[in-house]
Image (cartoon, rainbow, N blue to C red):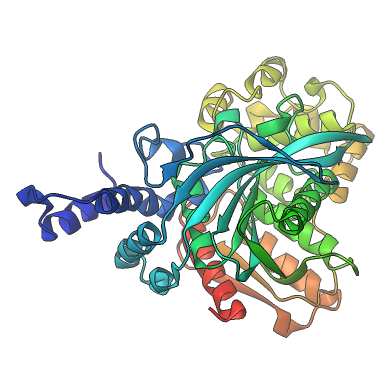
Length: 455
């Protein structure tokens, strides 16, 4: 079955004479393919957390943009950046065309097309970061506009991923990554972390929702982008401004990074604004929510968190302390980087009374055996601060994966901590769920960044 957005495309195509077999230029072909990618944005951002976004479109077929003739890494000897690999290029005409088509379905993005100014080069960037007292290589997707005019940085933190093949630097031609790399044409250096455990660091288990190590890797990624600018290896220049945006797991990572950057006094990039959507900001509250439900559609979240906490040494008990015996035995084999979240969910159960150990359900808050888990929840939650940087938080009112209360409670906590009410706001999308609220959140965030940047 075609989604409505695809059927809408066919009508647009017919109205433009495509049914009459007129000759199409390469740009027209690429713009049409790009439209398939962009209409998937209406749900792909939220689907980062439910596993089927990559199946919406055949991303193995030709996509817009041109793959680079060379994919050999270019070694660099920076303190942070160690190499860059050219991946693809996108022309400003292609970006303008695809944003024009996008605006027909998403009017809120109507300003984007006119801002498509520069051709874009896309790279894999390998950089150094710290992980449990060791230096490791991590990676990120970097899209830069081909201009010498200094531009801001947008750091996008993506949602939950379980597959190596879905990491940004692996899936750079997929619908969601193509959208974000195209945003660079407006005049941004766009950087998207693979996260530790993916890309260049698959030897490690992904530290899912582990705050400090995530912030460290993201900060080092941004320092690598700044360092790359100073090396003059690529045709781009930074103006020192930084914008953060993320959704779901990316919302949690974004707000954790916001917390860290607001405490820095000599950071080379100056945070201008932060936009985060539907993040599990309070891990105690989100897990209490999950356990309170008879049925939960995304059971893979819980085991992913526990395995990550084990990998970081936050907890050390056997999985049978947390999960029913049958599931505790199979859980480690599900999180190997090969299975999608849908695959993992299919091997678990949506019945929380059956997935979790009875002792945990009855005694999570009273049994001393779970004290280390509760401590890890608390220490890896986003802390409220007296922020001096504007924040927008987004949430769908019908979100059953991550309840709206997590956002409204965070706003209250930030205000109580000293953040001026004029610097933090919540934008609620009435009737939208975790998946469907993702696209309007990101569109509003980018529009906001454009306004703040004077675009």
